Image (spheres, rainbow, N blue to C red):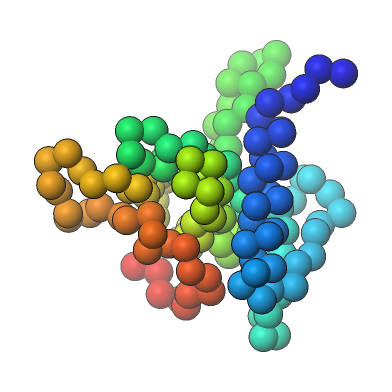
Length: 144
């Protein structure tokens, strides 16, 4: 069987997310299907969080996180925006930093860039520092 590179990266991201969440004191539950919008459920303090995990490499000092899914088949390339009502948290594993980043998908529109290196022009407005997204949980109602 030929390896499926995208699937392997997704599996690696999921494993890192599970370790990170366990270290943060969460109990973890795995869905019995791959066809849900979320990859795992974290539980702590009588609260369940549906988590979608993404694997994203850094490019030019940023980690770009699109809130959509793309795939190709014999009918062409397809894009589907994330249904933000069925996912509570997006966890992004970046192999370049070895860290997991946690985002409230309702806080962002279609894409966000987390910065792991300073901007070349010194811009600070509307810049999201990746290290500000390593903690979880955060108040899920604080979307803004």
